[in-house]
Amino acid sequence: MINEIKFTEKAIKQVDWLVSKKEPGTFFRLSVLGGGCSGFKYDFSFDKNIDQEDKKINNILIDKSSLELLRGSEVDYVSELMGTSFKISNPKIKSSCGCGISFSI
Image (cartoon, rainbow, N blue to C red; front, side):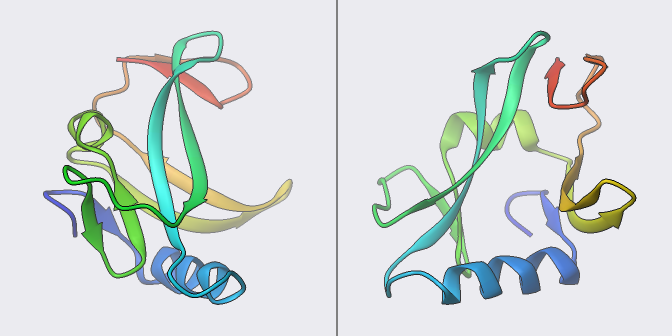
């Protein structure tokens, strides 16, 4: 858990597997970016640089601004009809777009 963000066991296993396929010293970065049709969207990427204000747990990095927007969330890795993906249950979301990628707070 990173300051009240819960990562399920399935999510952590998937992150660890993804990072194991990258060069040593690579981390999985979870960010909230401006964009999408509702104002914000989640971004999953890989990064070798740890900023001073990043929060780190295992192989996961979250920047300070994103951490505030994600506080209270649960990150899971799910299998659904459309495929597998990371799913974030964020109690701060007030609405989301039809595609489910962007949201507003």
